[in-house]
Image (cartoon, rainbow, N blue to C red):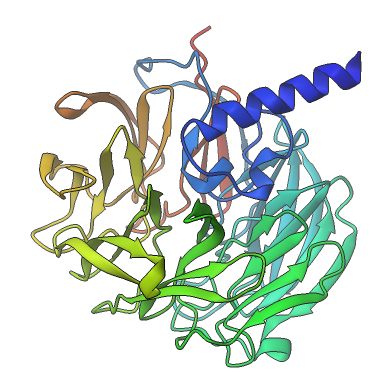
Length: 420
């Protein structure tokens, strides 16, 4: 009976998630309440939660707990197997951290040296799959741990093995698990994109066709043209890589004015949105696998979304522009780039979506709840966290199993956002 219930739950999860986006291998692991990787199932940044508050009390929803020993960094949270995972720097080391659902420390394991150069602190969010947690540190130490105990499983030094190459802000990729493969982008001449066996860390395939070094992008895996492919950004291009073979399927130039290709691409029906900050702009491209390239559908300099995250909801694209014309939150038509609504009062904001609402966290600590409306969006509620200097709240908020999670350096806050 238990086996039947488990199987039914898995089928229902797959149906629900597929309705909104292509799925990666990691996305179908665990219960429907899981958020097993960066931006959740399918990397759409859309939670499957229902029955959430449509308006918050004055002062915000009830806080459940705060864990104040995360260390320095910008890692978000992964939620799976009844545990919460994040990462942070303590003095000269980076640590992967596991908490229980009450915010109590379960284990803490080092993963190499802390990053002390530009924007010091952890970058990547751990990825969960089949009882293991995977994490890449800023200089390329890629490690696997047992989720329940933190016991190390394997380690691969991407700099040593693939001559990993990265820019000013180091490696910031949230790795993908696809079936038995771990996919990541060292960006080096000995391995631009690689697939490793998730159980052993051994190399499965290596791509050296791609021309450019790694950026700061966490890609996504989609089905298109009958091919399962990774879509990600290098420092100067957008690329598609065959997940089974590692072969380059297509490539399109995307050269930013500042080397900040960090936004997770948004994909729908053969169209891909990418963006970078400092007036590099946002661009929609249409894939052409026969020509191994992509054509630009539209490009707007004022949609220079950097690392805030972008959402595709019912044919509309939501995100935050950073520089051109001032910082603003936007809603535009996905296929045409036409403005639907723009708000210039919110500042730089990172976002997620759950139960018809956008959760928007300003980079200095204002948390907003916005309804999706025919006119774009409408502010419903807000509350203030502890005010910090700009770019302190860079970790994207997460909504999972009736809770809102907000990370700011040392502190991880959990709030109850259930309606009942």
